[in-house]
Amino acid sequence: MPTSLNARVTIVLTIIGAFSISAFVLSIVSLTIERDPVTATTTELNTVRTQKTPRIRVDLHASDLVGHGVYNLGKKALKGTDVELQGFAFVHHAPSSKEHQSAIKKFGSHADSSGTCYTFLAEGAYWKQTKNWYINTINTEGLSSSFLLNTAKTAANQWNNNLIVNPLGTGFATTTKTVSLDAPDGDNVILFGSIGTGGVLAVTYTWGVFDGPIGSRELIEWDMVFDEQDWNWGDADSTPSVYDFQSVCTHELGHAIGMGDLYNSACTAQTMFGSVGPGSTSKRTLATGDIVGVQTLYGDPVTDSNDSDSDTGSSLLSGQYITAKVILLSFVLIQMTAI
Ligand SMILES: [Zn+2]
Image (tube, rainbow, N blue to C red; front, side, top):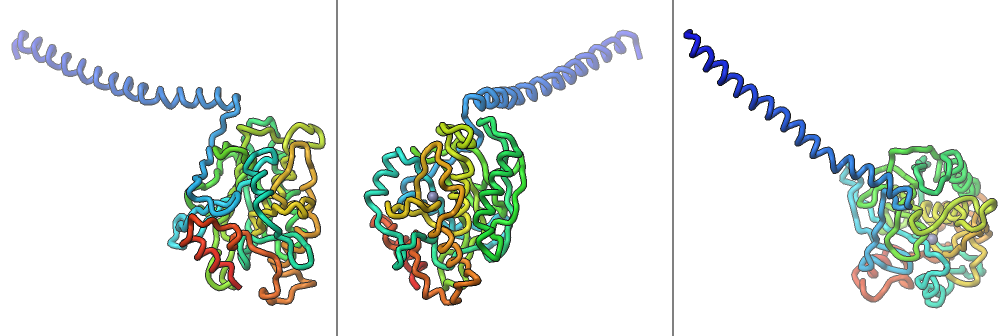
């Protein structure tokens, strides 16, 4: 090959090489550019997190409201299966919120004929197996992993210890598992996040079979979010200005195993009464109505008549809680609670 041709080939190869290198460099740059927002977002999240904007945001839709603090999540398939489950979300308002005040005025008694206060999500809807749970211990409240896990376990055992079955099993700390807000995913998880609905301290999602024959109903999954954007959490014994995590967790776990909210002013002593103020530790332990109610729902070994028709507690998803706006749904819900 003549020298001049060699030189031309070299030049062409050099140019091709230069383009290749440029393309390679460009691809790195583009990767870098693509990575930039991620890096920025992570940095931003970390910055924002210290300003109390958490990772998960719960947005409940007013159109799904079927009773005070009760949202219908519809029927969704359990992830990875074709099993369809009905979902409901139960929110817990701060006592100062206007939503809570109107509920106190609007809703009547949920006491049974003997005056004992308790109510169920739906008759017969309870855990038919023990299911362990997780608590994601990432939080902006400065609460330690051990405090959160041990406190949540204590709260869970308030219910477990009053039942032959242990519907809440035991808990495990995690920093990776999260709540499943769109459909059940098989894990029961407690998480700190943000709730968009005003005045709400915490929300519990419950998934299960709430309709059909009472004997075929059951609870399948729950998830729980504590709003750390608007409220401060901790141990109210040592820090009276905060909402007591153990008290509210005990209340929310009541929803997780099938108990409904109480709003009758005669029922304020119950853990399932739908209100608690900052600094209060009153819901850490169960009251008489909570115990009678949960033992009635699950079948107390001492008083169980094995006859659900004799249950006198009301169901939260009964007609009283159904608004006229959702006639079709109210029919379904009334059907599911009819005995
Ligand atoms: Zn509640």
